[in-house]
Length: 221
Image (tube, rainbow, N blue to C red; front, top):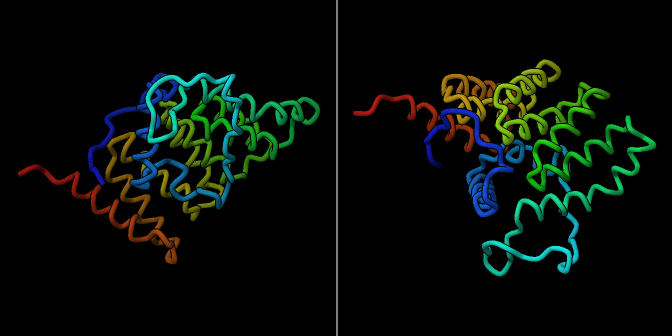
């Protein structure tokens, strides 16, 4: 895995070309560096796949990945709108239903609409503030939107509710490392993760990332 750190908040994904978004997403997933996705997966919040929109309503533009054309950000936004429409309608009569709010947020997250996703996660957390998994997902959306400080604050809040939460500890370390160039802070979070979760199935990967964070702090010869 590369050891280059990010020197500041990432740019908002909505401003990235579609090809870059998908290439970065694929890279993150392969390396195990996707905030929120690394540990969360389907264990905490099952992020639904976007429903297919009729091809006639979504003309294909832009590059292709293999046999599948890459949708543009506008197309992804449209797909998310289609997928969330029924849920949003339910929220009109049941606006304080955290389950519905989280479902909408998860769809927006899967479509890389991170601002919208974080807004819905925030609404759910006003109703159920102790939902650590939702707060951790929200933190990942904030990070992808470029709000590193608020992402870290949300993870710290998650850890107040559950100091041993593996998702929060892992993501806290990763954001400190990649978003703040804080290798020491990242290492401390990951060491706490391993200490409080001795049976962690991804322990070798976390240990490898600790080693890379330490190596990045060594002065060049």
